Length: 301
Image (tube, rainbow, N blue to C red; front, side):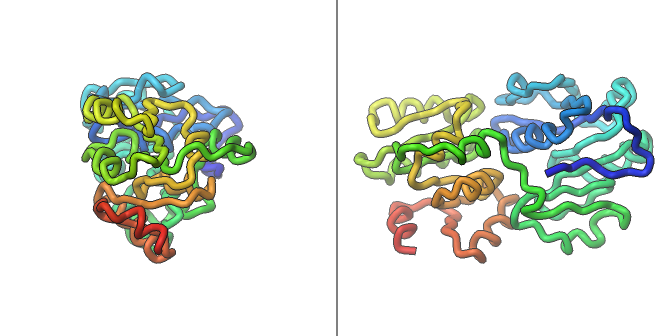
């Protein structure tokens, strides 16, 4: 997906793009991960990130210049825009609202691109909802009339590692692949693992930002059938080597569908409701809470 805006005022020179997003044990890693995919569409431009230094963040894994913000005020952000001569801002942050966006736009006059997956009001030039469940019509009245709304599978962001991995033949090593987001903030993974048979080969993927990591490591220590991958650089391969995935109804859904792996989606946050409704309409298996019969119910669905 090429998210570049075709603008009458644009020039042939490279643009200076600033992405405003955060990651933490509470927020998770999803915003940064999809922003990194988006950034690759601007390989001829200069890209940098603006982030808060929050607990459990993944700033050290962002391969671009990162500007550390000391506050969430528009004033500090606008100062950064001016200091860095920014041409376009990408907002991917639930904590930034339409008032913030409007102030940035009116003061700086730069191009504003906003990620959205919960149908909120935005003041931007480009609205991007890359979820397969996205409905363009629902943005009527939520964005300025001149805003370019980009919705749905045409704009879905898939990491390069998955595109490469899909071309490779792999032996299935795991019965179940589990990824409850980058940080599993409500600690769903142990509840799932406790219901699985010991003769099942299981791969669990998480990150060092998981606030419950120590508990998880202790749990799997005596379980020879469970492989725990922390900050893995081969998520696509591990997924490809699995027969069934248990994931959250988030960005990971796009990657699992792309890899054509059967999956169970387990809701972990209210902002996933739109994806949950879409998956239910399409007859995928979705749970709002895990239970001991979930695997059996999946195979009987």
